[in-house]
Length: 410
Image (cartoon, rainbow, N blue to C red):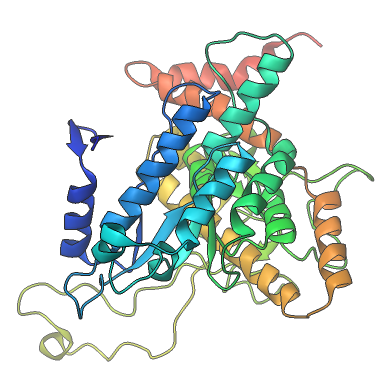
C-alpha cells in the first residue's frame, strides 16, 4: 500500500493509510475525511489509472471504518471523497462500490456493516483536480501544449455539475455534501441550486484576507440596492483592496454594506459582528499574580458588552504597508463574518420554501456583484509590491511609489 507525502515548513514526511487511522483514533476529531487516491500527475488519465484510483479509495475507506471492537464503532464521522475524476462512468462505479453489498473477507473486515456507505456520514468533492482535468481536456482540444495547466475560471464550473450529479445519483440524499475549493459566492449559489450542496470551505475568503481584501457583499441583495453601486448597469466589486493608496486617508469601516455594533445612528444596515467592525471593550483590566478585582478594590465588570468604534480602512491600510500581522487577522475575521452572513442569508431564503423566490434572489445577486474579482487580481499585485519592498529604504521607496501618478504629465 503506497505512502502519502505530507510537507510542512520544516520537513517532508510519509503517511500510510494505517497511520491515518491510528492518528484519527488517537485524536478523535468530530469528522475525518477518508484518504482518496487523487492522481498527482498532469491530466488526462488512462482508464487503468482511474480504475486503480477507485480500488485504492474504496480500500482506504474500508480500512478506516473498521470498528475498534465488535461493539465499538470508530468514534468519529467519516466523509468520503467522491472519486472518479472527470469520467462519469468511473464516478458512477465508485459510488456503486460504496452501496453494493460486501461478501467474504471484505464483509468480515467491516462487520457489522453490510456495505461501506453505512459507515459514511457525508461526501466531499474537491474542485481543483476536476478543474485541472477539464482545463487539460480543453487545451488538448484546441491544440495547446502548455506545461502549467490553469484551472477553468469559476464562471465555467457548470461543467462540474454533471460529474458530481453522476456520483450522487446512487447515494442517499439525506447525508451532507461538502465541496472544497470554491472561488466565489456566485459559484456557491450555483452549486446549491444545481446539486444541493450543504457545506463549503472558507479558503477563498481567508486567501482574500491574505492579499489585503475586505469582502463587502450580502445575500439576499437589499431591496434598495447596495451602497457601493455607482454607474447604472455596472456590477459592484465584492470587496475592497485595502493595500491601495486610495484608502490611506479613508476613515470609514471596512465594508459599506454593514455597520459596526456601536454605529447606532445607521440602523438600516446589517451589523457585522467581526472584531474589526464591532470590537468589544475588555470588561476589566488585565490582572497579574495575586492582583484581582477583590485585591485592588476594582468595581465588578459590566454585564453588558461595550462596543468600540470600528477599525478604519486607513488603519488597516497602515498595518498592511508596515507588515503587521494584525492586518491579516482583522481582515480574516471580517471576511469570515461576511461569508457567515452570506450563508445565513442563503438559509433564510431556502427556508421560505418558495422556489421562485430562491431563483429570483440568486439572479439579483448575480446581476449586482461582479464575479470576475478584478479587485483580487489588483490586490495580488499590490501585495507583491509591498512584500518586495522590505529592508533598508523601504519607506522611501513606498513614498516614491505613492507619488508616481502625481509626477506623470497630464
